[in-house]
Each structure stands twice: as C-alpha cells, then as structure tokens.
Image (cartoon, rainbow, N blue to C red; front, side, top):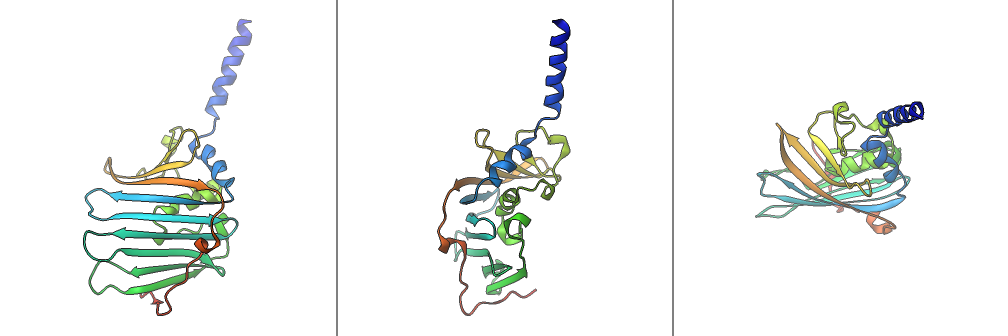
Length: 213
C-alpha cells in the first residue's frame, strides 16, 4: 500500500509539472467562439483622455474594431479598422494631436488570412491581444517563461499582463506595466453570440485620403 501511495503521489507531481498554463487554458475558450463582441475601457495613468473601443468578429474572416478617444476639450479621436476584400483597412479621424495633423485618412494592406492569421496593427489598440487569442494559435505568443504557471498571461517583455477570469478563462483586464508600476488598465468584457452584419464592416467618408507616411 505504501509503495502504491508513493507511486500515485509521484504521478500527481508529474501531472502537475506538465499541466497546462494560463494560455493553454484560455486559447481553447476563444477558439470555440464563432462570433461575438468585445468591449474595452482604457485609462492611462497621468493622461487626461479616456478611450472606449469595440471589437466584433465572425469566423473565419470578419473583423471590425473601432475606438473613440475623448479629451477634456475638442473633438474625439475616432479609429476604425476592418477586414474586407482581402485587405485590412484602417481609418482615423485625425492622425495625431497636433493642430495640422492629417484628418480623415486611411491605410490598407493586403491580408487574406482571416482571424486564423491574427491580423494585428497599431490601430487595433488593446484589441491586438484579443485577436491573437482568437487565432487559437500558441505560436503567435512570446511569453515570459518565468511566469508560465501564473494565473494570468504575461508577455515576454514582462510589461503586458492579461488578467483572466478564473471561471471563464477569458480576459477581464489588460494591464500595461513600466518600471514595476501599472501605467494603464483596460477593462474587458466579452459577449459571445451573434453580431449584426452591419457591425462587421465600415464605410469610409467619400473624401477620405491615403494617410501620409
């Protein structure tokens, strides 16, 4: 009996050592969502602006992300990014905070891989992390190996943390760290389920121009 208990204990230790980390638990949850909506509320320490954004998706190749950054004065900064016609399009209401920043401008790049290839781009903001998860592919991630048993997901740079709901294994918060301090928080809410066709794309104003380099 004693030998059996020792052997069983050793097996449990080995099983724990080889157990799934947070990413292995989270990826199947996202890969199983055929379509849905994710909202983000972003606040950066020391900044007077706040940002609300939304990501809607439908497998295999529909995605639309939009954000609105509000300032104490002046109009908000609006961004739209979406997949259409084998391209990833991005439109901004203005290209920066300076007075003569280009307005009503867009970029496009060839992209035919759909959600499986995880199209990520700067205009996607915190949505970048969720699109990577939606790809379901672990090889899209470079993580901090020293934290692979942490209940959250940490990037290799150690400065981006995805906080998981331990019941659903979905992201509930994204935290950016710098010099050991949390400098930005994005609250995340995911609503799996049908999304409207009109939410999956966006039509640019007719007078939009190509964003200058």
